[in-house]
Image (cartoon, rainbow, N blue to C red; front, side, top):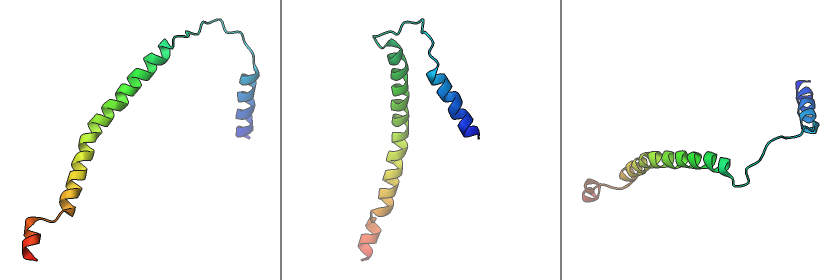
Length: 74
């Protein structure tokens, strides 16, 4: 029931035609202002997490690689 009511409300808003008294900037200034900080935050997060990933991979490789004592025993 609520799904059909939600769909009806959504369709009524989509079909309701109102004039837009605004100017859309064709240069994409707003897109740039949103996109660049978002990409910078994602890049910063990747840099921060990369050190942890490298450390975990190095730890895994140390566990898998045989040590000198293991080779001298055999």
